[in-house]
Every structure is written in C-alpha cells, then in structure tokens.
Image (cartoon, rainbow, N blue to C red; front, side):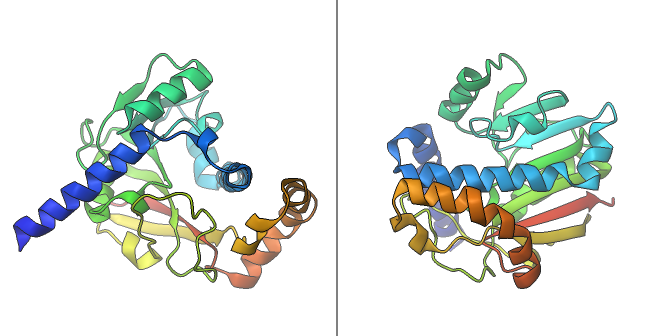
Length: 245
C-alpha cells in the first residue's frame, strides 16, 4: 500500500514537472492571460499592504521565493536579498529572459530544499502548494529553512471558495484546493488569513474588449467589498504564518 502511494505521488510529481517544463502562457486564450494578470495584480497589492512584508523588507533580510515560476512577483523582491527557487528549468529560463536575472536562481525541489536550517526571514509560496502531492512535507521543509520568528506567506487555491468551478479550465495540471486547516503545521502559527478573487466563470465567454473594460472599470473597485462580504470564501486563500520554534 505504501509503495503504491509513493508510486502514485511520483507519477503526479513528474506530470506536474513535465507540464511546467513545456508551459508557455502565449499558447493560452487571451481571456486566460487577462484573468491571470488580474490575479497577480491582486496578490501584489495584498502583499505590498502587509505589515509583515513591509517590516521585513526594511531590514537586511534573506528572502526565498519558493516556486518562483517565471518571475510573476519579482517586483516584490527585486531590490531585496532574495533567492528564487523553482523545479522547472523552463520557467527559470523564462524568468532570466524576462528580467535579465543572471544570479540567485536555483532549480530545486520544495520537498527537499537545498538550504541550511534557519536561513530565511521571509518565504513566499504563491500558487504552488495546490500542485504538490505531499504539501504537508513542503510546509515542514519551508518551516525548517525559516528563521525563528520568520514569516511564511502562502497563497493557494481555496477549497472553501464560494465559486467552485475553476475559471482557468485550460490549465490542465494536477492541483488540489486547500483550506486553512490544511496549512496547520506544528511550529507555524497562523497570524493572519483571508481570501480574494471572486470571478464567475461565465466572464470568460465575453468579448476580450468587454472583459478588459469590466475588470478595469468595475471589478477592481468592488474586490474589497467582495472580500468583506464573502470573508474567506474567495477562490484564493492567503495565509500569513510565523515560525514559533
């Protein structure tokens, strides 16, 4: 039984890695790119307004972008002491080409991080854990390399979201939505959490010009209202954790 479980995990792991090693955003429909940009814009806005992020970035802190992809959130860390890790050479190459980033990139596995204990003051793990079979092990690894009182920012697809159907239907790769209780790891204290992104799938059928107009003229104005209305029922969950031991 244990061998079968391990074999299944390895198959899914290799499928996810194969997916990202051939991934190219330009191959997706235009609506996909527009909505992906919206999600990234919301994430950047959330993190920029976090007290924990602003406190750490003022210090000479070490930061890890764990699962950095092709650098969607580079602007949050480009002027800081940051290591960028991803398991896809394809995505790291895109990262390098997009931002002329010649150093501080590591191809590595979140399940076996190539760093010493207590190395980082802040870790980002954005849109990663839903693709990791053994996400608990990944959380323990990030806790290991985080300094005591260090901060871990996790953003993941929310299993308790009010909208269950994924708007990114073309994104055909293993993922499992998670909840706040799934992020519960001994030695990591949840100090803040919330959700965001309330986009009904029907929007993807709109003409591109109308979709852009709705997002730019209306949706961005009501996102905050929707967060207050639906509390922790957004399609993405943001959890801020602190290492306590």
